[in-house]
Image (cartoon, rainbow, N blue to C red):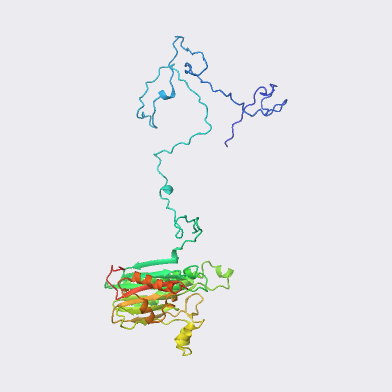
Length: 441
């Protein structure tokens, strides 16, 4: 192994001049530490090797005359030597110096050591490291517009928490678009959506939208809604191009969404053991598919789909029936719709996706509208502020079919202006499906 070099002890103590033995670390007479290297003298004389003294040294040194010719050898300063690069090629402005004859001397100066040594400049030939070259610019606070956002998502200047990715989401896919917002009262967005467009085997365009609302009383409702919306959207995009009937494809998509949410209850396997009082992840789901003059909707829970025709003189319609306490009271004739939805138990759902669900009963329905319009697919965060089909039609922009993304923004804004008590998610699907490539203006 490597060892630190050892200093040899002097023949006599440098402090008291008493004789010492080899290997002694301390003087037996005065206790002086013999391992300490003596401090060099303060002056740094010029050391000459077969050369003459440098002018201005202030000290007269006898000139060396190794060959006895009486002619002192030439003296070279460091600046007289040629500068070369690592390949021994002379640098610009430095002419090569002829080799010195044998016996020529070179004088070496030992300048005073500076207190601080300058750092070596970086070699320009060394490429910049990828980490430094690709360093992302610091995120600026959305509140004060001055502070930098730290890794925890808070402004270092004003302390404002920055919006998370799911606090506000917008997306469009061809002619269909959706917007989701956290709302004004919730600390996170537990809604999620999926939009897409594809084609049937004969080339007929198809558009689709899935909207899910996490059940707040369950564990990880935001994860449940995200898993369900992604699974259902992927299932539809895979089944429709194969020629599966849209209503059958919607049923399969809801089953796939249910399986994805059920799987969350097993991640990790010991989660329920540590918190047995918590419900498994759960959410509602509603979706719409527009294909070849057919409008198909599917749902479980209390998220809804509305039909709003372009001709507002024609009647709008609600296309889904809630799996909720209020809907059951109305269906049983025990309460009017106004009375049921005014009750504090109105939004207690009787159907949902999740491992704790009693039984999965996907609802699907197919319609053939006789005129163009839009399908509004939304969570209760919107329809709480436009409950009836007529009220929904009043807040849907007249150009919704041509500008679905703009219309979704308007509908979310309507809910926020009304109080934004819940997460708000809405998708706008034009009917019939426009040709491929059409989108929001």
